[in-house]
Amino acid sequence: LNLIERTHEMFDEVVIGVAASPSKNTMFTLEERVALMEEVVAHLPGVTVKGFSGLLVDFARQEQAKVLIRGLRTTVDFEYEFGLTNMYRKLLPGIESVFLTPEEEFAFLSSTIVREVAIHGGSIEQFVPAAVAKAIEKKVNERQ
Image 1 (cartoon, rainbow, N blue to C red):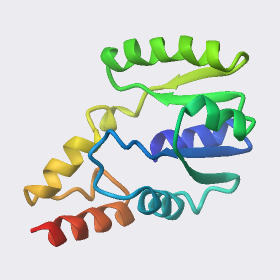
Image 2 (image 1 turned 180 degrees about the horizontal axis):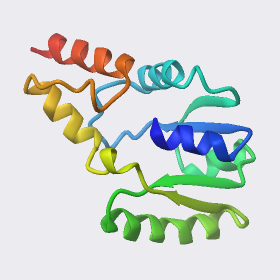
Image 3 (image 1 turned 90 degrees about the vertical axis):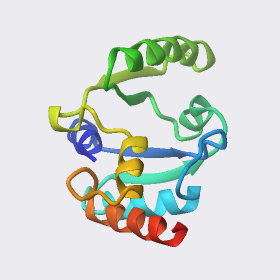
Image 4 (image 1 turned 30 degrees about the vertical axis):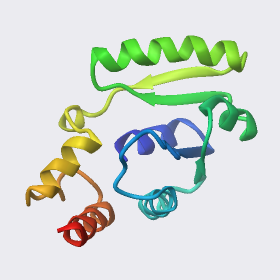
């Protein structure tokens, strides 16, 4: 949310693309993730949330996006994103990538860490918005 709020300060219109990510073992369906994100960003005018499958550059083309905002936590993220940026430029000439780093308090967070903390009974409210924490806790309880 921190990166989204900061992006919102830079741009009048922000489209959050939620990827289907079939290769990832996600806790929520694409529809559930879109709905949660919509709830979390409802207070930000000009921010919309859309699910997509396929290549990010195809989604960007469809949305007529000119800039991709990408979050970086580590140097490993940077190396990966740097390679992707060059591919994006080949596939969609003119697209720009802007990298944002999280606030220090969120730099270590990942969905895997949050999920593991929740599965093992730890409190996640300090790491994610309340609506997301509630949804994760509900999923964890359903699976046990």
